[in-house]
Length: 624
Image (cartoon, rainbow, N blue to C red; front, side, top):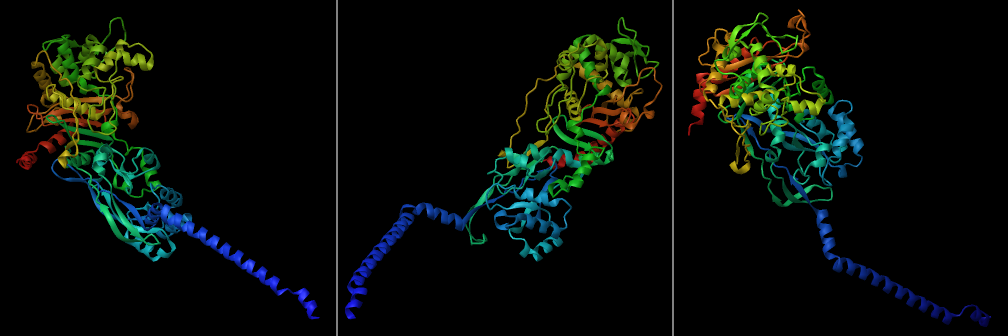
C-alpha cells in the first residue's frame, strides 16, 4: 500500500517542479523590475527636461494683461473718450463642461432676450489661447452680479471680472467723428495680431477709434501665475506690466461740436468747420447721430436693427461720406478759374435776359430768376448767384479747364489726413465720362457743371477743405483731426505736401473775397438777411443742390414735391473775412434754398465760435 502511494505521489519530483517555478517567477519579477527601472530611468533621466517643462505648464500658466486704452481729448482738454470700470461675465470652456447647458442657465438667470444662447456660444469660441476666458456679457449691473453669485454652483467655468470699458460723455454729438469700440468679431480675428490683442475684447470700429487703433490700444502685458488643480491662481511668479495706449488730443472743439449738433435739431444735415491756418478740423458733425455707448456693451439685435432701418440713417456719416451736388457754392472757385484763364476780367460785363443759349441749340438754360438780373459782372453774379453769367463762363472755360482747376482746391479727391472712410466726391471730366459711361461729353453738361450741378459731387468735408484753401489765399494745409499725443513721441502725423494755388494777379483773391462779402452783407446778397447785425464781416456763398429736376416749363414748386425730392440747402464761407479763423461748409438735406436755411445756420455757428468771450478764453488757455 505504501509503495503504491509513492508511485502516485512523488515528493522529490514535486519539489523540483516547485523550485523550477520559483526560479522562473523570480526571473520574471526581476525582468519586470528591470523594465520598470529602465522606464523610470528613461523618464527621469533621458526625458527629465521635457517632463519638468510639462509639469511646470500644468502648475503654472501665462495670463495676458490687457493695456489701458488711451484717452481722447479736444483742443481745450475736454475729455471726449474715457475708460470707466465695469464688470463682465467670462467663460472658460475647458472648465465649463457642458457649455451649452451653462449658456442656457446664464440666459435664464440674467433674463436675456430670446436668441441669446447662439450668440453667447459663438462668443465663447472667440478665444486665442487654451484656458483663456471668453467674454460673454459685459456691463453687468448689481442685480445681475448678485444673481450670478447665488447660482455660482450651477455655472462651472463662469467668472465675473472687472475691466475698464470705453465711454463717450458727449454721446450722439461726436458719434461719427470719434466712432466707437466694439467687440472683436470673427472677421477681426482673421487679420488681427492675436498676440497683440491677447486678453483684449474690444477694438476700434469706426472714426478716430479705428484710424488710431494702433496708438490707442497700447501693448499687452503678461503675468506667470501658479495655479491649483482647479485652475485657481495661487500666486504670481513674475509679471510684465502692459504699456498703456497713447492719449490723443484732437483739433476738435467739443463745445462748438455740441452746439452745432443742437442747432441741427435732428435734421438730416452735416456741418464741417476747419481752422484755415492749421487745417485743424474744429467740428465734424453729422445729424442725426447715435449713441456710441450702446455699441460698447452687449448691443441687442433688435436695437441694432432699429438703427439700421431708421429712414433718417443715423449710422451714416454725412459729413465725410455724404456726397451732394455743390450747387452755387462753387461759383467763387469758378470765378477765380475764369480770371486766371483770361476768359473774363474783373471788368467783364454781360446782359442777363434770364437765360443762356448754346450756339445752334434751341434749349434755354434759365437763370433762377426768370426775368434775369440785367447787366452783371462777376462780383454781382456771385452776390446774386446769377446762373446766366456762369453758364457763359463755363462755356468759355470748357470742362477740361474747369476740372483741372477745381482739382487744385481738392475737389474730386480725399485730402483729409486722418478722417476714417472719407469719400472723394466726384469731379467730372471728359475722360471720366468716357471711361465710366462710354459716352462723349456734351456742351450742356459743361453748363450744368458751371452752376455746381450735373455729375459734380462733393462731401461737406471736401467743400470745407476747399473753402479753407480759398480763405488761405491758395495755401494748402491738409485737414486733420490729430493735434498732439501724450507721450509726444507716440505719434507723428505725416503731412502731405500739395502745390499752393497761385494766381497771376494776387488782387483776384481780394476781388473774390469782396464778392463773397457782398453775399452776406451786400444790398443784393442772397444771404444778406443772415449777415445783418453781425459784429464781424463774413465771406460766404449759398447754394441749392438739386435732387429732382423739374422741366423748365413745369409750374410745380419745391413745396409741392415729396420731401425726399426737394433740394438740399448748401453754404460755404469763412469769417472774419479779413482774418479767417474758421472755414465752414453746411448741407441740410431736402431743406430748400441755401439762403433760407443753410446761411442762417452758418451765421449762428460763426457767432458761437467768434464770440469775444470765447476768443479771449481760448487765447488765455493757450498762453504759455
